[in-house]
Structures are given as C-alpha cells and as structure tokens.
Image 1 (cartoon, rainbow, N blue to C red):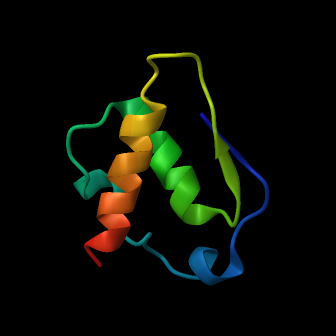
Image 2 (cartoon, rainbow, N blue to C red; image 1 turned 135 degrees about the vertical axis):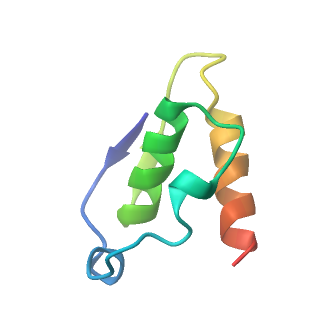
Length: 68
C-alpha cells in the first residue's frame, strides 16, 4: 500500500496518468491502486507484509516508466 504525501501539481493537471495503470499487466487490483497513487503523487511509501507484492509492484512501475 502506498501512502500519499501530496498530489503532484504536474500530474494532477493532466486528465490521464502516464503511463495509464490500467494498461499494466500481471498485477493485482491492489497493486494497480498502488501504482495509480505512485503515479499521481510526488512522494509515496510502498509498504506491506512479506509476500504482498511490493517488489513486483515496484518492478511493474519501473518497467512502465522506462517504456515511455
């Protein structure tokens, strides 16, 4: 789960997130929500118990941003 600090003005002005979290495959709905928060805030902390997908979510985020 990502805890948001504050919305990023550069991102919140846009109507769509970059990249669109709905286009990222092989992640759960909770991971998709975490990616949405990560892409729409200036700072966030991805946390959770072992096995919740923190590493998998981070890798999906990095791959999505690298593909831009």
